[in-house]
Amino acid sequence: MIYEPAEDSFLLKKYVLKFASGKILDIGTGSGILAEAALKKSKDVLAADIDEKSINYCRKNGINAIKSDLFSNIKGKFDVIIFNPPYLPKHPREPEDSARVTTGGEKGSELLERFLKEAKSHLKKKGIILFVCSSLTGNVEKIMKKYKYKFEKLESEKHFFEELYIYRAYLI
Image 1 (cartoon, rainbow, N blue to C red):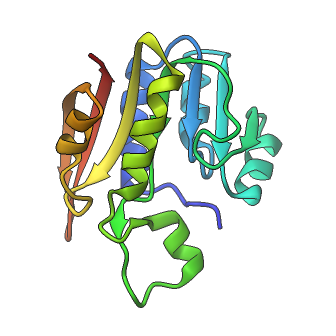
Image 2: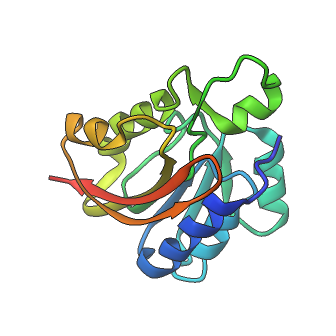
């Protein structure tokens, strides 16, 4: 199932257009909306997703895309890593196919934590991570501190059942 761009994608896209440069990686690319935005700032963009349909869709739209479970098939270091993760807590009635694009684990933060742990070895010395999460995700700032990231909340946006947050993180 390809993640349809929604409020989170559009909010993060604004910051991709502002900060993307150099060698860029879009993890969990889904429809490729963020990789496409990054291509307006750099020609060196790689999109990755665990979903084969997403990869094929991106390739048909001229985006360099590979299949990867987070960083499992990623080589090298990047100036900018973009991530619009599944970030909601697990809901017992959500179908498995939609949960794959919305659920970040039991608490909602497990996938993001795994990403932040693994991203360190793929981020250039002065590189940045741009990502979106939700007020329902859990204590994201505590996770970033755990993995020794310096960070700033770039924007928040209230929606009917949650608040979305855009973060820029980098290594200390």
